[in-house]
Length: 156
Image (cartoon, rainbow, N blue to C red; front, side, top):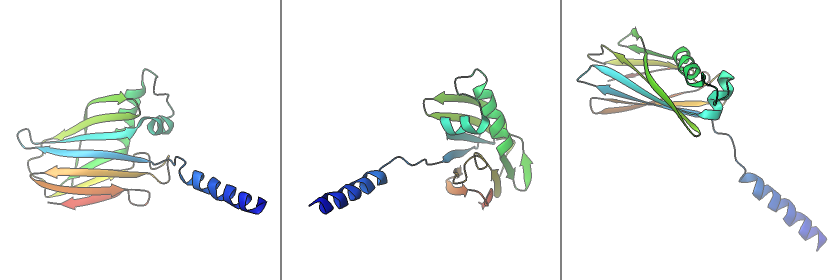
């Protein structure tokens, strides 16, 4: 009986451990093409704690959002039809466990090829995955980025 209780106790411990929270490191960026203004609009969503750890600034610090914008600017590059584009930040907000960063690039009349370099949080978290969903004139494309695959390209 003791052996049975011992074995069932160990099995119960393994079962409980399998439900323990595991860190999942990811960011999500949505790209929308606005035909009227010839603009690509980007919305990036990140975990507040993860970005706070990466930039080494507490999220309640006054300059947190400015540092997040600077970090994204240094870790996200866009090339349209082979030409690098300048990103203009239009806003950001911290909402609980989520940080939203909004930016855009204008003067985009046509997109035949879109190349993105996305290294957000890749140096801080080895298992980080960054997803980018692109909506362009009725077409949807998805890119993923991780260590060793920091650059991705799609054609329309």
